[in-house]
Image 1 (cartoon, rainbow, N blue to C red):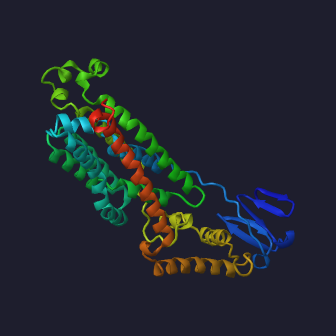
Image 2: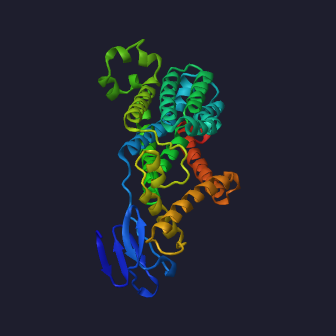
Image 3: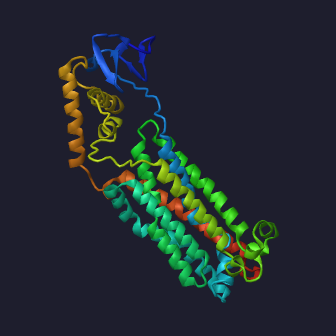
Amino acid sequence: MVGEREDGDNEVHGSVLVRTAGGQRDDDAEVIADGSTVSTGEAGSCAEQDAIVQETPLPRGPMATVIALQLAEAWNIVMLFPFVVFMVQEELGVESENMVGVYAGLIGCVWSLGQFVSATMWGYASDTFGRRPVLLFGTFGASCAALVFGTSKSVLQAALSRFVGGVLNGNIAVLKSVIGDVTDATNQARGFSLMSLMWGFGAVLAPALGGMLARPADNELVSKILPPSLVSSGGLLVRFPYLLPCILQFVVGLIGFTVCALCLPETRWKNHPTNTRAAAAEDHGTHTRDDEVGSVMMEDLENNTPSEGSWGGSDDEEDAVDRRRKRGVQAEDEEESVFSNAQAMASTIVYGLVAFTWVINDEVFPLFCASDERHGGMDF
């Protein structure tokens, strides 16, 4: 037996700790967890079972992809906020000051509107064809839409390019599915926290660089770095003064596309009855009988539902395997609509309200700064 340590009434074996009722030891039964055999009290006589499971390391390739694409996603949504007001006034032909805010808000929101319209479609596509092709297509499509937006000369072109970019890009939902595929109960929170971290980083960096690179011909620092032919009279960045930040958006998306192509294996597992590492291993050809038995024991420990009888005999192990398979069948039979899940709907509503207030601030604040003092703005 490897890694055994006795501490008072508890026994720690590898990554699992089990405390028997009344602190009494019983070495007659065995518990199989994560493929290793450990000695504990008889499971049927235990009044209390506590499990301490080591955190599973996050897979580097999928998480690198999540980081790169989430950064690109933040770039897609918030990059234009610092300059969209000036773009509407100077390039898109809106002369009425009273309508600048309307069109700026319209252009800012249609990307998210496109994602909202197509989210269910891309989610279904990722379940049918796989996460990887959907992420690659969405990233490339959104990157190309950014270049079209940078060359816009009308409100219609600007709004359509943003809307099409949002429709083509279902990455937000699919990235969360990838995290769910490659994580378990021990590391899922850390995986989602990395996703939120990169969104926050992108939401800071993208508007800062977007505002800095807009109208490069009027920016002495930027114009000195660029070739004179681009910022001189009649140059590309003079004819399209808001193209440069969109080119940077395209580059960020292209980096994300490359990382996804090189580092992300397909994470959608076929016939995946339960979200356990044992089931995943089965689909990847590394599944063993001990994995199934260990999976059942870990589920029993996590749910505080001790299995009947001891875990030492082969008959009990066969029962464990049968029980795990039955759980998968029952889960499929009893699958309910997410709309009838009160906890899921409450979380979704709260998430939507937080996003609503966040977008209001990001959209309105640049407009407030750019508006004339006569209209209550800061006249920057």
